[in-house]
Length: 115
Length: 185
Length: 160
Image (cartoon, rainbow over all chains, first blue to last red):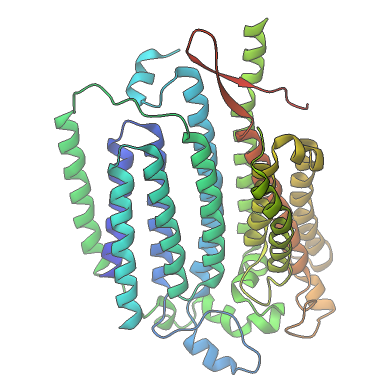
């Protein structure tokens, strides 16, 4: 059930990226899709009544193995969040440049003007 | 049951925020509701026992908000003239509903929420990382030891991608210095 | 780009040091508590952004110029590569944690994990310098009004 709601978030981002005419709205839709994917990856690794994957001092190793959540999706999602920041920054730089050259954010106008 | 109820409420909040961000006409409002989605996501990471991710998500969200507001402040949307393309909109709606139905059938084959894959598969790599992480690498934070010792190639790739993104942004935004100077001559 | 009012400047003068210190703390104890290079690097970049927003662009560029930002960025990436090749040279495996294998430290202390600490510092340098550079370049642009009523964008002279 939680997976289905996460997928609804992804589909909302997809709808925004497909049907909007303002290029900043398209970038916002891509960001919403990226949030949904990161959340889904971390949801896959959750263990019921789990603990965070950080070893405490004086705890038993077998009990830690049995109770901790999966650390591998968390490592991948850390990389993914920072890469998403870099890519969105490049997209915003392109939007600023487009606004300067054509004076509008509207992609149908930009396609018609064509420099 | 407790964690799942909180996650449910939080996800409903995220979906409402996403709907507001998509549909509102003012650009600044949609950027601010994007920020609200990011903060709600950070709280969701705390519920899912991922404190490392919560710190990274909040810091990145603040930086992203600053960049987006910097790009959109003072530049308003002039509303487009009329015509909504009905056929295209219908096709997109059908596509998204079909995509969602397909995904729903795909989720039936996943494990129940709360039992990860590593509890079913005995020799998954995560079991080895959790069991031997402290002994082999000496770091108590298993996520850091995966990122910088067991899977350090991915971190090298991430550093390269960040480098390329920064160079790309600098190249795009610096080129206009020459054209402006030539125009002013 | 001008700075802000006196209240913001006074609060920033006290606050930026604590943000910077918090970023350094998260980087250095990245292997004992949640944190690491990425989170700490972004927080350090945030402290420099706060300085730029409160005091103006010229004040910050006197402290940390664009050229220094480029050098820090490249040196962070190079340090990470040097650590990787060092593992290759003396262990036979790329990225081997040789300091931990040769000189293991006591657990749960600061020096307990070998090359992970150096890698954290390298990654944080890279991320902080990259985000600071992007912010300075994005904030160079300014909209002015020219005489015929339309809007025009100018760019100030860059330092290089």
